[in-house]
Length: 431
Length: 97
Image 1: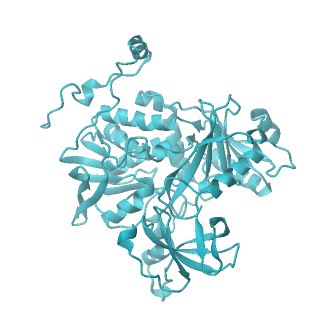
Image 2: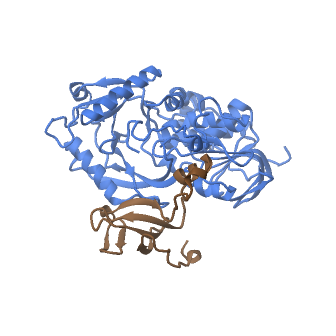
Image 3: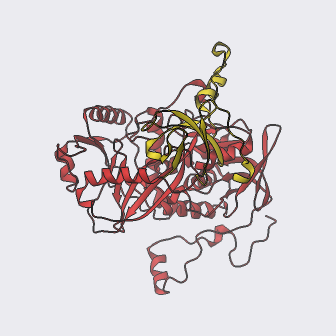
């Protein structure tokens, strides 16, 4: 290594203390003033074996598994803003794997298995809470679709059970199940291994763990272009100069089309604002996750006591991180019908994240028409739950220059061959 | 909430409208001669512009007519609304993006 390290921080390898009960006690005795920085803030080197564009959860997970599983440590993650400032810190933190189709079930279930050991693996508490996820059925058709999906899940080894209205009432006493309500609840599926995780801890944990393996995480560094020669990517142009790269992975969610445009190819995705909101904090009333695709309302309660509410996407393309008010109104209307006791609550904050939605509501983890360039996009409204599995499979794709069997079906080419993985509605939510 | 200027009914709230995606996409003239890749482009590939975008809207809860809108997808400013089938008006894209 020719680049001299700054005195005091040293290399990542020697500076990273493990978090443990002992480090907690030690730092408590010094009034928590001695905690070291969780990851370095290096200047970019002139070249890397691979550059991951996008420092969200998926990009950081990709870098982590590239280093951990494939021994690629001369790599960098370049991030336009700051770690945890994009969709990773804007979602409703729901984790589940009860998808209908085999390809999706395999990918999301692989992610869920990684979630189950993630805090230990990263040495960072991501607060993964397997509190169960319920998907509600409001009419006979919903019930049939629910049964179909439960059976498909079980055939794929994904835990999934049917709950009758009585069983739902026992689990969630505050929900209005009356048959004369506006949205009568006729049943639900439950995935007990599903739940929530602390979303920004996921970004921080992956950033810290990747940094400890030698990955350079470069924030405040927007990408302005790519150098492509003879169909092969050579370098990434950034606000901090041109960086040579043998391989480039694009993991930029709502800005995937913008990145692809710079590299000279097109993507079948549309960028739509997806919004979420949180209420004022209250005492614990809801210890599971309730989702209703039919009325587009998703709600859980955070450890702080806030209700975390997810709404639908705007119907039109937008890059403004806010979301349209009629969407908020529709979702809150449905929440108030399902939970009459929430009617007098006030909402504290509302925001949007730009999600890239594919025509079949399934992601793209694929090689691209440019050699050495790979893309991980199209996660639409449900990317958070897949973060570990997405990074794991995409790291394989980048390292080996071919997809892993888990993501082989999620290619760019599927729109030409017609082998779509149609999770619109089938994935238990309306996208 | 967008206030969309319907060319026939005037400015109305976005909840009266439904979205039709990118405007000015022509169906292939000779479908028999189109390759799979060209079909995939026609069916699935749309511009996803960050900036001024030409898009279709239908006033479903009003006059029920389709028309086109030029809208900035970052600021959400609507620059023009014009009849379906008409050519887009001249816009100074550089200064608007």
